[in-house]
Image (tube, rainbow, N blue to C red):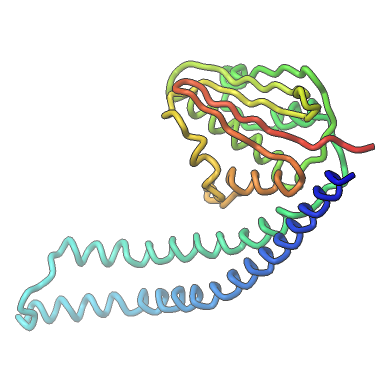
Length: 259
């Protein structure tokens, strides 16, 4: 009984922190949009006047009014790269702000529908964009226990996709290896998904693997492993990583579904 009360107290504290964090992120997003728009407007104005500025500068150089003229390569770089770099950076920042608040908001949503872990994995594998059959055959599944779990909205499926993408890229680089996905119940009665693959990445990657909260894919900003871990923690689950010189294993814990 005491353990249950302690658990509920911890959950309530986490929920309060989640609400506070979400409000704080909303304020940050709002406050950042105004200066970002100012930068975009300034960049647009600069783009309009830059041709005239460069023409005036060239005339000044021709009339020997500039003691130390800038190199042509530098001027060309300013003309070709400065505007595009400003547009690209501000556009990426706007896209980032567009998804930051929804990510934080979705992070603390509670799902009410439980799923079969086997059905969930099979569905995710069917939807995953494998490049060919050979890549698809890298994945080996072993359902020692087809437990039911409550997925974290917007994050659980994406977590498995991230792990698949990382594993396939790593195996592709090394030219060998396979991916093992195993579901089981551990000796403490906790639902576990083991995701293991061969890699030649350095040892101890688990120390930084969850530092990245966002990732870029096809010009889109997506939640990274850091966000996925937070979402699992909020729903009484967790994800851990263990690595050796030639293998990485992710251990994902899902809370038991209470009937």
